[in-house]
Length: 274
Image (cartoon, helix red, strand yellow):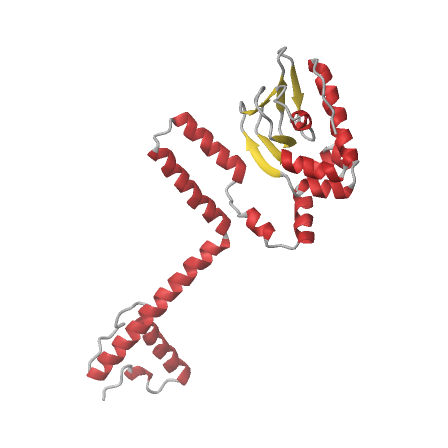
């Protein structure tokens, strides 16, 4: 038989092996028969086998490489997939351009390009780990809020575990006067205006809270609250508010003191009951 590479017959085994490896890789990676077409039937079948194996390995390599790239930033990919659905939803309902822009800006400020199933992640952790993460995430809120800075650490932890993160855009009415209140809010970052009947306007910013009056009086909102900037808030529902304060009655007095001061400014009374 005629040797495949006559010039290699007397070369070292290293050169022979290298050329043989090159020939095999040209079959497998290029998914073809390489530099020289097969001549006999044995060559034909071996070449077809190597091409099949090469095509399979190539497909597996591409698949694994794609999965690896996607897994490097799965939270961003999840955000992009979610926002594509939002875009399709807006297009389906033919929402006006300014509304679409506000929705886009909301998603950018709320999720900042990454999306996590935070509730599910925290739900899988032990209570000590969950509390540690929540305390760390809310450390700036605690540091800026005198109510939390001087309170019992157990009260702070109990309160933080029940907070829900929310984002509001400039001009949004977070609270409307006359409505039934079901939440109070703590300001992590941003500026809000409290608007009363007498057109009085009070500004609140980082480290402040509002909306507790309605939860204490079990009545309707006594003022409106409007976001002046992008606001990153934490909300506390009325049920969770009462649940925590039942365990810490002294903190209820602290909320009532601030509430009475605010009501004095708008000329209303706070009905304190059991």
